[in-house]
Image (cartoon, rainbow, N blue to C red; front, side, top):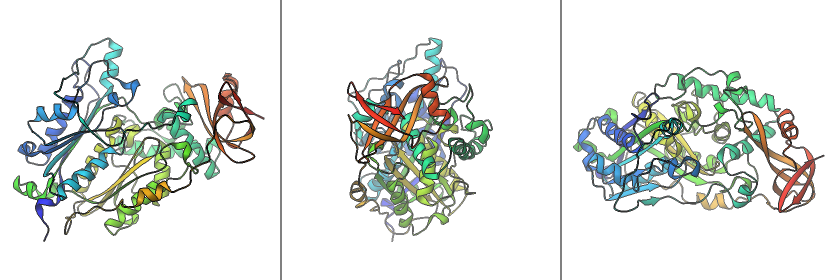
Length: 512
């Protein structure tokens, strides 16, 4: 018989999106998280369950992750402590995650492991972003106070490691808005498409996200967006990092929060949580591709996505055709394209690949999007009894991957998770690209992106290969002449030949 004190189950979820509050009246991150936590308890039909929480994890805020999002209005010194204090619980475990869009799925998996092991009985995952209000307040010159002292700093959960290497930073490849476009160009080249053909395909892809967002009252961009509108460059839809327009980028300036409440089936029974509310994690796995994008020999592939999803589905003894609902991580088109390819899902599959509208249209609340993704999947599955829903998540530049398979089907026997055993060792053994620096000689362009401001290209970031030994290098152009940089948009430069020179310690690519 199943030991109900060790059977983990999701019992409550809640999401908040605020598009209208003026900055002087809007809720800050703590207030958003507290409201989401209380909403999850209400959703479980057991508002008093919050007092039984013995594990609480908060997803790291973007203001604590990236310097350009640092809040001028102060910060919570210990976010999980602040939230726990406000909702009236005293968890024995308070954690604050490290950065990464994959972390919510990792935390849900860990909570299930801890409940199955008898170390936790009731756990809360919560996160929030208020960058919309932060940005609006700064523009208006309004001073807010989001600071809160704490008796001690939070205990960190996860691995702290930069998303980019020192070599990548040297050439400007130090932000996701440039890393993902570099991957995108290799996808296009592998498919044999011209820039205009591929732009249209990306527009079609992202229009499927927009269509779902239109019907989602929690989405931050709900207006209809055609493929042509998404792919076409304009003053309102400029290039960010070529070839991505604004509508192909995650929308981070949002006020959004989400919470997921898990407990043992025994605790759910104690609080009379209805069976119609209960959703189970049936399969899960996690693994990393080579950490830095330029280390990957085939940047258009992801062995980690392939095997993480394969193992996740295998746990439930099903295949991708048995999944009714998907939410694939969608920060940029390349994330969707690679995931679809690796798991065997057509990009025009009628099941679609999102239940929210994705990060560009639903909203991209920093590291916390997948908390919304899982919450949305739980709500979808409650009205689609016994169906399976697959959530994928990634962090950094398509480096860190996790997946979860959910269903209202009760789990028979003990909950077990051994799906990731041996996977990382296998992934680590995959050969890396031969990467070098300070080189000279004949070369070709393997991929590139452009830093663009107001639709004017300012810098080219080039990934190249030497002709004589195929070693990969990074470079910028020898000149920042606008006409030269614009030619990287007007013409397809992937495969273009030239030479690389080292000047003042940096590689410069010169077109033939």
